[in-house]
Image 1 (cartoon, rainbow, N blue to C red):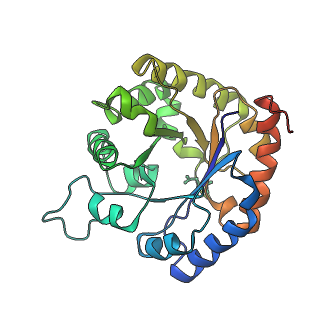
Image 2 (cartoon, rainbow, N blue to C red; image 1 turned 60 degrees about the vertical axis):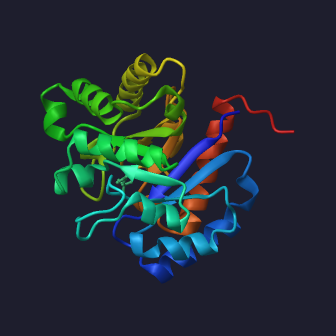
Image 3 (cartoon, rainbow, N blue to C red; image 1 turned 45 degrees about the horizontal axis):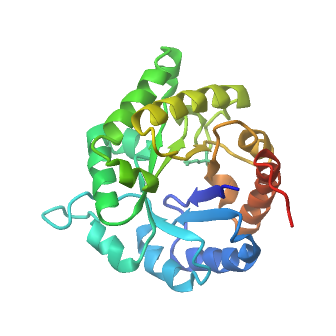
Length: 262
Ligand code: PGA
C-alpha cells in the first residue's frame, strides 16, 4: 500500500516552545503509524532547529515553509538552502498561496526554488491552486497547467520522485475560505493528475488536497480518486486534533487502497 501523506503548515503561528511541545506530542501520538503514513510538519523558521532536535520519530518529516533559491548572497532577511540543510530538514514548501498572493511570488520564482530544493537534496512540496476570480472566469485548469509547467520546468525525470504537489484552491484556504465540494476536488485532481502524467510519464507524483480540510470533510476528500494525501492548516494545529484527523483519514485510506491488516 502507498503510504498516506498527511501534514500541516504551521504558518506564522507557533513559536519555539509551542512547536516543540507540538512535535513532542506528535512523536508520542503517531509512533505506531510508521508503516502506513508519512506525517509532515512545516514549522516557522525560528522553531526548525528545536523541532528537529525533539523529532525522535524520524518518519515524521519536517520542512521549511519557504526558501530562497540561492546558496548565499546579498538577500537580507532570506534563508538559503545551505542554512536549511544544516538544520537537517527533509522538505521545503514552495509557492503556498499566501506566498503567491501576499508576497507576489511568480511561477518562475517557484521554479527556481523547486530546482534549488531538489539540487540540495530536499523533497519539494509545490502548492498550486486557482483564485476565486480565476475560478469565476473559468480558467482554473489553465492556471494549474501554467503553475505546474513553469513550476516544474527543467525538473529531471529522476528528481520527480522528490516532488509532491498540493492542490489548494485559494478561495478554500483559511478562516474566510469556503470548503470545496468533493465533486469539485475530484474533477480538479483528475485534471492535475493528467497534466503531471503527461509531463512525467514515468513517475507518479503524489497530489495532496488542502484548503479548509476538517474532521467533517477529511474522509470524503481522501476517499476520492487521485487524492493521495491531505495538507491541513487550522484543523491540525493541535496535536490531539492532528492525531484524530490522521487516524480518521487513514481508516478511509486503508479501504481505498485495499489494505488488508495482518
Ligand atoms: P486551512 O489552511 O486548512 O486552515 O484552510 C490550508 C493551507 O493554508 O494550507
